[in-house]
Length: 196
Image (cartoon, rainbow, N blue to C red; front, side, top):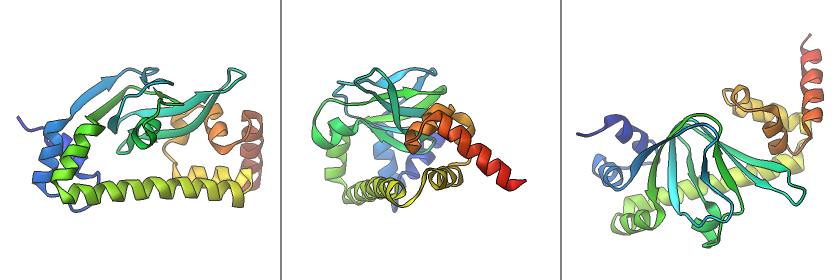
């Protein structure tokens, strides 16, 4: 039986896919469910699953030489996630990918996805669109660190991700903004006092 919700989620992945294109992808992957605090990918992993997050929230982090966890990114509903070190550079992951909430995904093996794309030019265009968006996100983050002060970065983060702010512990948001949790607390107090 066709899972129309799954088809709809896949259809959102990109542009100009026909129902037939989506069905090809649908048949090639699998739905998975994870509890909160589950590692999808660990440091050193070479897994190459491309993951569409249907529901939930995933944190990407590393552990530095002092043993501190440094959050570098978050992914949530209708976003794509992959072990970028393995997929882009064929190297083991430098990062951990952990669910922060119960999470439902649709996953397809990257190598299998490559085979499907090779047979379907529309999917190849779709891949370019996805990589273009990933590159755009990297440059936007880089620009924010160069052009904005920490308070401006926080305001931009809240405006861009209003529903995520309340789902994520402050220490993870502080990491993403490149500041300490104490600094984040001060920024929030300053912003609150300006609104009075």
